[in-house]
Structure formats: C-alpha cells, structure tokens
Amino acid sequence: MKPTQKLHELGQSLWVDNITRPMLREGTLKGYIDEFSVTGLTSNPTIFDKAIGAGEAYDEQIATVSGSAEDPDGPGANSNENVFFELALADLREAADLFADVHSRTAGVDGFCSLEVSPLLADDAKATIDQAAKLHAKGARENLYVKIPGTVAGREAIEESIFAGIPINVTLLFDDQQYLGSADAYMKGIERRIAAGLDPVVHSVASIFMSRWDVAVADEVPAELKNRLGIAIGGRAYRAYRELLDSDRWMRLANAGARPQRLLWASTGTKDPDASDTLYIEAFASPFTVNTMPDKTLEAFADHGQIGDLMDPGGGDSEGVLKQFEGAGIDLAALARRLQDEGKESFDKSWEELLQTIADKREVTAG
Image (cartoon, rainbow, N blue to C red; front, side, top):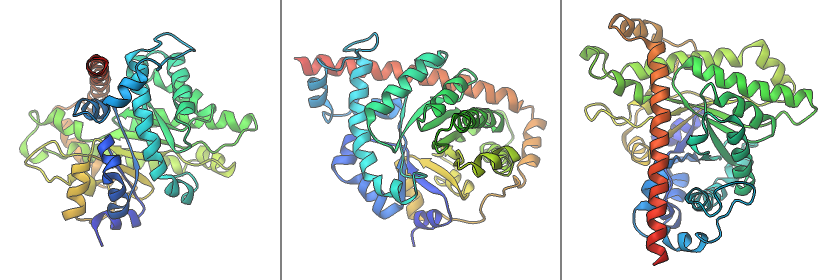
C-alpha cells in the first residue's frame, strides 16, 4: 500500500496544490486520483501565472475570450482579470468534474477545487462578497470553493458568503488565533442560516500555512530549533481545532445539522533543501483534516513517505517547543501578524504579475 493511500485511509484528505491545462489534458491529475488517493485540488494566482505563461496551452482560449470576457454587472469589462477568470474556471470545472464522484460519495465533505478572489479586494468586504458570489455562480459546480483571505477585514466576507450558501476556503491563516477568527466567522454565518430557517450545511475549510514559519526564523534560531516552528504552531492550531469541535457552541450547530469547517494544512512543501522533502506531510498526519501539497511533494510522499504517530489532539509537545522559540527571542504573535501581512503583499504581487502575463499573452494572440 502506497503511503498516500495509507494516509487517506487514516482519515486525512490529500489534495494537490497545482493545476495546469496539460495536467488535465494529459491525464496527470486523473493519475493522481487513481494512484495517489488525491481527493481535491487548490490553486492560487502564482500557480495560474506559471501555467498560463508556460507554453501555448492557454493561447487559443485567450484569443477566443479576449473580446467577450465582459462583466456586465461592474467595471472592468473585457479586463485582464475577467479574461483570467474565464481561463481559470475552464480548468477548475474540468478538475471539479474529475472529483465529482468523491464529492458525491462523501456527501459534499470532500472532492473540492478552489479558486481565489482577487487579493486586491482583501480590505473591501462588499466587493469580496460580490465577487465570491459571481465566481461561484459562474463556476457552476457544487464542489468549487471560493478562497477568501482570513484577515480581520476578510471575516465579514467569510460570514456573509457562508450565510449566502457559498462554500469557502479561508486562506492566509498562520496560527491558532487567526484560525479561530475564521472559524468564528464561519459559525456566525451558519448560525444566521439556522435562525433564518435555511439549510445549515455549507462546506468550508480553513487553510493554515506552515512552512513559511520556518523560513521566517531560519537565520534567527539555533540549529536544534531549525524546521521545528511550523510543526509546533501546527500542533497548537490542531489542539484549537479539536477543542472547537468539542465546544458547546459547535455541538449546538451540529445538532441542527451543520457540518464542521475542516482544518487544512497548506504550504506543506519543504523549503529547506537540507530537510526531508516529506517533513510537513508526515508531521501533520491527522484525521478529519486536509493536506494540500505541491505535486512534487505528493510524488515524493507516495514514493518514500513514512507515517508514524498521528498528531496529538492535545497538541503534544508543541507548547514546550514554542517556549523554546520564545526563549530564543521570537515573538510568536507578532510573527503571525507579520506573516499574514507579508502573505497579503505577496498575493497582491502575484496577482499583478498574473494580470501582466495575461496582458502579454493577449497581445501575442491578437497578432
């Protein structure tokens, strides 16, 4: 039995953090589903920028939609942004169809693909809410998540989108407090649906980014603490997740028929070339969670991954490890805020680069 199948059977969903048109057309994604127990997919602007900019796979559609990718309900008709969403949704519909059986078999718990709203809207709740609704409707797939950043400003958009019945992947979370903030927004949306007599089942995941912690402190801590911070932060977040699922508040919602917002481990590709390429996959083996990983990490884990003990619902030794980092001068709360701010800036930059790639491709295909 492959390590990927074993991890799946232990109760964790394995998603791949990549999508390209060749992956779809050449059967690579189908192979991941059949051979590596992959049950979902995530995307982001950087992934699409690389996919669209590499080769000619998207050129024909770019030429076709450039004159018709209009948004009749708002500004930016025929914009590079609208062209991008046409390209991305074409890929994600095809991917979502590959996961349709999983989505049906799990009663909507699994089998999702994710598309991000424009990160430039992160501080504009109303615009984010409007775009999330339009993208989900245009995607025309039940198993399409819309990704909304889990910033303080994003929580209003998360709550309103959940209340509207839109499945949401909360992105850009870094610690237990940011996770709990997004979970609160999710539950408020569900509580409002129950009060309004609406179906309480609206699926969601909360994506917490792990490897960036270790990158951030790599040059600031002693050797014995290298590549241990992300795992310890994850242990604390997992404890918060399990405690929330046992809380009176959640039990009341579950009793009304609601489904939990699952915790998703993101940024699980190893950045340190001296560390194991399956470090974060093995560390975050935990039931009723999702791990989305780059395709190279997925392939590496399928080849030589090892599964030891599952994560401790009580956090294991994470608090002791975190105290060591604090003793080394790391302000964990401040670093969490900094990582989220830097992540937001990085998302903005990636988005601008993506739109420039679209503009360049439009110019080439117009000729």
